[in-house]
Image 1 (cartoon, helix red, strand yellow):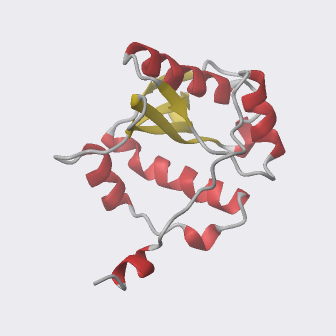
Image 2 (spheres, rainbow, N blue to C red):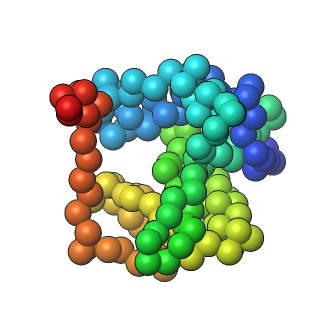
Length: 157
């Protein structure tokens, strides 16, 4: 395999970012759930009040993976990094690219001196669970994820 370069995501990577997001949604059996657009990703990643950052894995100028993260805050611990997703194109999986991306986010979390690096994994996603077990991650079976959808929020007075 060619040399993999891990670098900061740039504005020109937004189309590749969206393609990978859609690939992940297909893998997770939810292709119709992706409603984010390139313009939203551009604004949220590079606008005046950007709320996420991402790393890109590339080979010969082709984006083959990303790791998207943002800062969150714990009232008990303080500043934390939340890893939203690591996505590697299917044909490039099993080559350590996910490891490189995860390590890059973990190192930035360490440099920022955050109290935790957090992420979620679907309970049925055995490859991802096994990947995180290699990092000796703590799996939390105590907390339940909750959310209100956009439509539910629109019903509020």
